[in-house]
Each structure stands twice: as structure tokens, then as C-alpha cells.
Length: 497
Image (tube, rainbow, N blue to C red; front, side, top):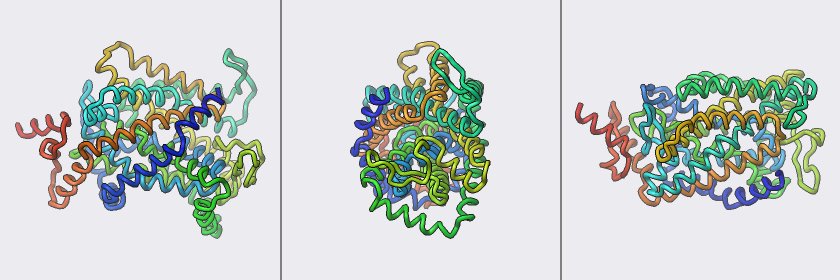
């Protein structure tokens, strides 16, 4: 199984996808005239300016839901893996893909808003919806929807759950071994799996509003607490900071490992963490109640900064400044070995040992708690993404009980993922991320060349902002944007008074 997964990953995550992610980010940055920089203050203003409605969640709630998907295992175990297999220089490429990816996040999230729909009393949208309406290819929309349901409903939840189980086991100990029909597992992992599955079930059976209310409280709390811990560790070792930054920059271009490995691991873990271009962010973006699609696009661009430039950087600096890492060199053994050879780079171990080296006895439980909240909120985001794509397919199939089947399948994936090994879980997750990224980035590039709806939307928003309007409006027909039915109906209702 592991060999099959590795073989698929070598195809999906070839250099072509790495260049596609970076190239698309650079292209959209140029086309939007680096909106992720020009409108940074506007991003901050928009975070708290919107309100929820009976059909949609607020801009901040949408940010929290999308951040719950972006801020997860990739920010702790994923950064460790990038350093462990790509060297310190991989951090630079994570930053690069985040900066460029913010423009991709703007494009895909604005598309999610433009082509969203009302479905059973709530807003729905995402790549499947805009592929059908903007691309005019329903078969492509179905391929993405099915791939996303498999990825976020079955594959990716196992990665998040696996990291929770490993962190708890490392923090509290194994607690003995229990023999089950699936094999022998530690008591710590079994107890963790049962607890996570039970709590997950309680929340996801409550719908998107329960998810939004939970994440808008937990996500800011966990992110701020984690970054503060990193700041304390960096301040305690402040004299080493210039050398660490210099090492990251130097290794990014003259790395200890192969140049391709450094870029590859940095981009792979960067995309896995911030999800820019992957097609997950537009689902939460579409659920937001906003006056203009570009507003939510800018908010989602900011979420990429929060994920990678803040939280991922916090992990990287903790690991590097304390020296709690190894760099694997393949058949050559270790290029850098500061830790025992059996410390798994595909786990939270680097981060836990980094914190523990400064606060003895505190590192393992702290990271275990942080990882639980990071990964658990990501599971909620994955469920909502999968649910949205099931809702899209349900429009045509109209099969009863589809949502219940999804809930049970995702909970089973979480149970299984908590118990299985990290390498297999990460490999399966990489397949899911890679498939979604391929489909989504190619799709939004084609949409751009066909009609440029996101650029038209951005220019319209900038024109209204420059004119000093007090109430933003969006008229897709006047902008030459076809099939934006939701916004056309909203304009007609507004004109009727």
C-alpha cells in the first residue's frame, strides 16, 4: 500500500505541479497588480465589517471556517516534514508560495462568490459551481466534486486525525496495547480516536452554523496562543535569529539537499498548509454574506498570510532556533542530524521537542493541545467542503441520505486515520491535495482567459471604493459576467424595492 501511494504521489506531485502552483500565483499576482499587497489595509477592514444573515455567515465567520481548514496539521507536522526532507531552505519556498498564493486565493474565492447559489436556505458555492457556470463544462465540475468528496471526506481527514493521535501518544504515553480486529493499537490512540469521533459527530450534525460559531471562537484563540509561544522561544534566543534567517535564505538557493527537493517540499507543504489554489477556500468564501464578491476574495487572500507567514513561520523558527530537527538525505543518510534517527519527520515530534528544549516537560502536552485544536477545526472545514460538493451532486442525483452517508464515512476515516501510521496517512493526504490542485488551478486559468470575471470584479470594486460609495453593489450583467444568477436576482430584488 505504501509503495502504491508513493508511486501515485511521484506522478501527481511531479515538478509540473510545483511549477504550476508557483506560476499561477505569479500570473495572478501580476494580473491583479499584486492586490495582496495593494489592498492589505482593506483586507483588515473587511474582516470585521460584514454581518451574517439567515442564509449566509459573516465575512469573519467565513474567514474562520476557511482558516480552520488552512491552519491544521500542515502548520506543525507539515512544516517539520518540509525541513526534515527539504532542509531549512524549504521554509523560504513556503513563504514564496504563500505570498504568490494569496493572489490565487483571491481569484478562486471571488469566483466562489460570483457563482454561488441558494440551496435549502443557505449559500453554497465552490469550484464545482463555477466550473459549471463560468467554464460551461459540467463534466469537469463533476470530476472536481467527486475528487473533492474523496479527498476531504475520506483521505485528508485521516492526516489530521493521525497527527492528533501521534501527539497525544507522545505527550501522555502509550498506556498499554489493545488488540482489535484491525490490529494492535495503543490505548492512548484508541481513546483519542473515540473522543475525536464523538465530538466531531456532535458538531457536524449541527450544520454549517454550528461549525461557523465553533471555529470563530477557537481559531483565533489557538492561532494567537501558538504564535505567542513561538515569539517567547524566539525572544529567549534572539541573538540566534539573524543566523537562522540567513540559513533559511542561503539554503533556499544553495541547499544542503538537492535544489529540487528543497523547492518541492517547500511548495508541497506550503500548498498543503495554506491551500491556495487547492480549491478548498472558495467553499467557505461562497457562504459569506457580502455586498460585493471581491470583498470576500480579499478576506480569503489575507487568510493565506495568517496561515503561512504567521503560524507556519512560528513553527519553523521554533524548530530551527532550538536545533530540534534532522535533514534526511535519502540514501546518503542524514545531511543534518541533531536528533535520534528514529524521530519521525512526518509527525509533530520536531515541534514538540523544540518547545520542550526551552520549557522542559511542557513541550509535548502544549503541542498536543495545539495540534488537537488545529487538526480538529480542520476536520470541521473538510466536512463542510465535502458536504458542499455532495450538495452539488445532489442537485442532479437527488438520492436520499447522501449527507448522512458522508458524515458516517468521514467519521470512519477519522477513526482509521488516528490509528494508522503517519507516513501512509500523509501520502494519502498528498494525493488528495494534488488532485484538487491540478483540477482547480487549470480550471481557474481557463476561466480567466475566457472571461476574466475576477479581474472585472476587482476593478469594479476598486472603482466604487475610489468613488467613496457608502453601499457597494455588484451588477454582473453590466460587467459582462454571464451566469452569475444569484447576483442578478439580488439586483432585481433591490430595484423592485
